[in-house]
Every structure is written in structure tokens, then in C-alpha cells.
Length: 201
Length: 218
Image (cartoon, rainbow over all chains, first blue to last red; front, top):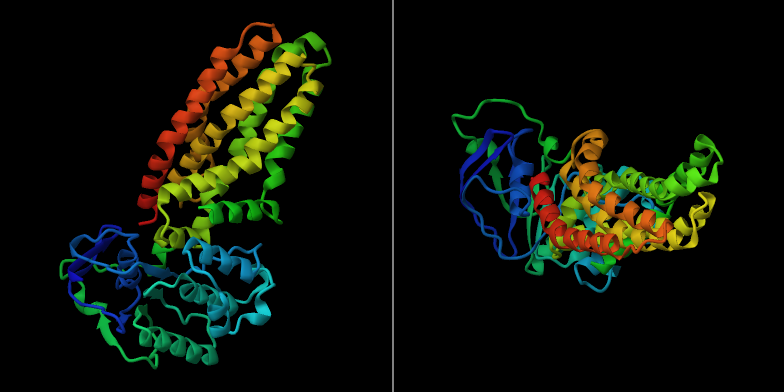
């Protein structure tokens, strides 16, 4: 990323942001609500165009937003298999065991709790086989035990040469650089506390 | 793309998928029409093709907002947009799934329902051929409208306003083919036009729809 500028809904969010995320790196995005975490992640995923500067993404990214993208009437296994075949990967087993989903495999996604849905949504990242993970507040709805599991999954992913960009308000036990987006807020930006969920809803 | 198509078909036939909705609506429209109009067989024969086509068109319209709307709400559209599959293929796969769960069953049911409207055999054939060739265009145009109104809360009215004018050519040529067949006139020309509209829609709308999806996902 070189000198990135982003706007959302006509409001300048970020200006002059420069950073690099290489293989094995983890980048944490911090900032108050409306700082542009979601917008920056969506820009990295190629969903939102950058206002100025250059953003180069070398590896195909796997994006995990606020919504988990699960189909309520499909079972957990079917949900994951759809993504596996779309991304051309073979097996969902690794993702299932990493997130302890075996007992849930045959249950329709509609009956899962919020935390269980989130685990399936995060398991999708493993299923895609992508090197770069973009995660928007991934630990929402996860209990303390699974937050530990999450740290482990991310560490394993980084150890295998993967990279991750995570927006979070928690202190996760993963080594990585942290960017506080509040510092990159353009001076001339109208100070409106825009809800960053608006990007998803 | 095949995986996405299969997923959408599976979703449509499972509970809450809305697979039966269009069919039942079509059935209701066509069975209620003779009750409303009266049992005069000559009148029914005259307006039967039009009723079948109108019913099919409205049944199609009933479900087009679901093509992208549901995926948009639960976030799968974001993931699909970042998946290694072009948006054009996403659009095409989802339109195809919509056609297989609405257009195709409507086509198969039309000859049976045509009997209720006292349509002569040649008209039944013309309606069936016409629907088979014309409904893919309805799904493609509808999917495009659905992509346009993505994220608009209760965009149903806007969607109808956008989509119905684009449905008119299909309606005109489809009903014309059936009307001509009912009077034992040659009906190749309207059928050819129907096929042309569908081919045109298949050539244009995947690209237009994909562009609109990209904008709406920003």
C-alpha cells in the first residue's frame, strides 16, 4: 500500500497510509468506530476502489466481513463444500478440525448460534487456501476458548507463509504490526461518526 | 460456476427457497382467469395465450428480487465477489439457477394449464415453445434488475418499474406467436424474435449485471 486515501459516503476516512504486508506478516487495524477499518479491508479485497495512492495485492485474498455468508438452509458441510469447489480446493477436513466443527457438520446453518456461525465463517478462510486473509472483527461472538483457537489458526497460517490483515478491538496473542487508523484521518474530513457497519448492511 | 449453480438450485428446493412460489402463483392466475371472465370458450381461446404469458411474466417477476437480494443480505455476495470466479459468471450462474427453478417449470406446466383455457393444440405448442425460448430472457433481465436494486430497502416496487418495461418485447412476441398459432397462422417470425431477444439478453446482461454488482458492493 502506498499513500492510500479512502473515502466513504463522501467523507474522507484515511489519507497518506503506507504499509507493507508480506508473507508471514500480520497487520492489525485499529481505530474507533467509523475510522475506516472495514473500508480499508474492503478496498484490499478489491470491493471498494481506493480514492488515491496505489494498493497492490499480489496474492488472491480471502475476505471475511461482519456477515458470515452462510446459507441457513444448507448444512455446515454443504456451506463449506460450496466454497471449496468455488476456490478449487479439495478438502474441508483441515478447516473442520481446526475449528472443531465435526459435531456441527450435518446441522443446518439456521440452527447455529452466532459464535458457531462465526467459526464456520472463519473456517471458510482455511477452505479457500488463499495466502492473504482479510478479517473484519473476526473475534466477534467467539468465546474466550475459541479466541485462543483463533490465535492458533492465525499463527499456523502465518507460519506457513500466509499473511493476515485483521481489524480488531482486542489484544490478540499474535505477533504483528499495528496501524491505528485514527492517525491517518484527513484533517479536512468532516467529523461524522459514521457507523462502519454501514459498509456491510 | 457449476458449484454456484448447484448451490442455488439446492437452496431453491429447500425450505424457504421459494421454488414453488412462482409455480403456485402461475397456477392461481391461470385457474382464476376463467372464473373471472366466464366460461365462454371462444373468449377464453382468444385471451388464453395472453393470460398464460402474463401469468408467467408476473410469476417470474415475483422471485427476481431474491436472485441477489438474499446473498447480499447474508454477505455471500461479498465473498463471491472476492472468489476466483468472474462476476459475469456469478451473474450467469444465478440467472440460470433462477430460470431452472421458475422459467423451466412454468414452461412445462403451460400446456397443461393451457387446456384449462380451452387453447387449441397448435396454440399449446406455440406457448410452450415460446416460453421455453422467452423465459431465459425474463430471468436474465430480472437478475439485472435485482442487481440494480441491491441494497435498496423494499426495492420491490422500483424493481418492477425497472424490469417490466424490459419484459415488454418478450411479452409481445410470445403472446403474438401463441395468438397466431391459435388462428392456424404461421408463427415462426415471433418465435425467432423471442429467441433473438433471449440471445441478446444473454450477450449483454451478464456484463451489465456484473458491472452493476461491482458498483453496488462498494
